[in-house]
Image (cartoon, rainbow, N blue to C red; front, side):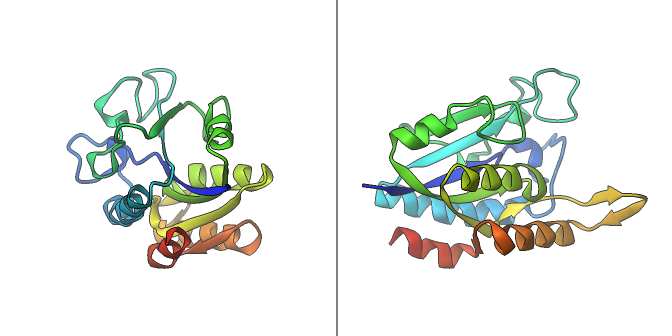
Length: 187
């Protein structure tokens, strides 16, 4: 029977402004993780698949998520428990050079609820790739975080970056909704 899985992307210590020594704190990671934890609790309660993805750069030359560092570990607010898959990736797209698609196939997953960071990078990439692979995707916009960006000398505030990417995903790729509404998918 096809099923829905929760995909938690890069909720790692380096992204949390409240984590001592965070190398790349995002705007609103704690609030996003709080909403992700609500979804996580419901998926666990319903016995539905949960997959955690964490990023490590391949060398210590990276600005964050250094190999085997504390900053690259999944934050304790949404940490994996026994039986939940944890995928290590080295690319922006969680499907690239990982076992993610194999795990989803083995679990007979056809729908995903996606949460995590960064909205404009790994969330965007995994969502588009998943849709292209045939998965029905749902992004919990209030369980995702990003940061200010700079382009051509202009600073784009994190809130606008986030909204622009959520608008683009909802325009042509997937359902983008809040945590409360996406809880209905697992009831």
